[in-house]
Image (cartoon, rainbow, N blue to C red; front, side, top):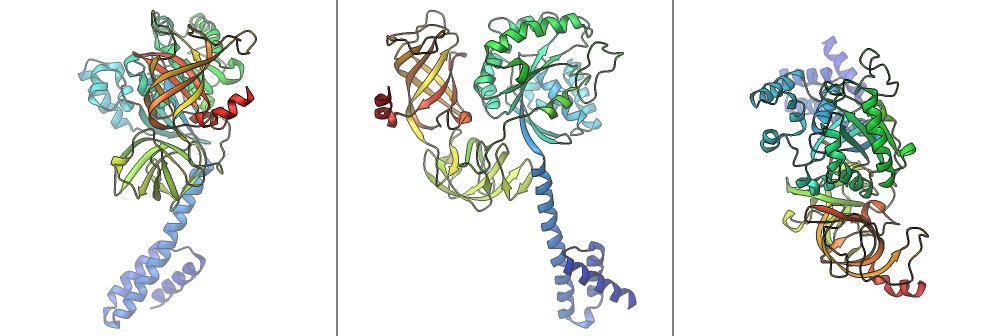
Length: 509
């Protein structure tokens, strides 16, 4: 009896303090079960006493986890670069080194790769999960995975490098905060990716346009027999890339960092290079570089914006996307634009964890009530009711023409495919308003009838369906876009105004 009384008093104390000794709680339930003859009432009381503190502990634990999770900053990292540069292998190695994948899984992938006579692909299998990707050795979809360092939670977005899958790469880069440009140091491979038509160039230009402001240039395959950690080869690649990065709009001193690695062996990734392997490198390893990157803070109190990249049915309608602005709580009433559907937030998930609140920069799955998944398309935006995102079929833009198709002239009537955040929509250039003189940065006096490669113009663009967008000056993430045609990026641009303000514009011009 003494023991029972002790347990009872311990349990009552812990219930008062909001904590509980779980073993004591369980013992009490067992004791009350043993004492059935004392009556059902006692048993119910004992159970209730045990369950309530357990519930409190559960709630406290959830709150604690949420606080822990939100303490660390969250960054999306997109891996970009030419096909076969080693993006998926590097991503897979990061997951292995950060403990996200165990040895047994790696052994299974090694065997699978060996059976396909592709021994060096086994690390890429961590990121490339579908059979087509594994058979061809090419990433097709944007692979998604998570890892953590001491200060930061990262989401890896492994973008396809092949030119046929650039639209998928665009959707990956539009969600990213920072980019890792993977370049192969192997003789001939860097040159193929860098020459005109190679994906290294197009990916860099797209990444800058899509808002990837910080870039880590990872010189991969430094262990290759044609390279063997050669400083000359590393310097040659850096000297060719720096001028190109500058012309793409990157401030190389502030926003770009070069790092030599071996993605397959994991060298200079989690720990720094040893002098035996490479005597000339004194810089950081990849994990250190990722941790030290500073990105601009977003406004958690701004109007809520979550461009939807995917939707599915899961105990209701669930949408996926990255919070570009504002915050969301369970129970919030929101609106889906452009179809103006009022919805309520039932649950929020970050990775696999359910949370009560999420701020800007987080990748979320949000379960909603009040709408069917068939009424949602990729490119729709979940936004605050008080300040919804504008939806338009026409807008004014500033465009830079990169490289038109052969014999093509950029005139009113030119048709292309518009990519803006998660929207992909056919568009037409309705009017060329003015051309900017690149020397004076001022508009030319004569209104252009057509323009050529390299021109910067202001124009009016029309789309068939209503799409959501913001002015670049208000929301850069939702006001940048690219124009593509026949599998090629021909222009990059930013939204400068909506047509409803036409009268205001003409009065100020």
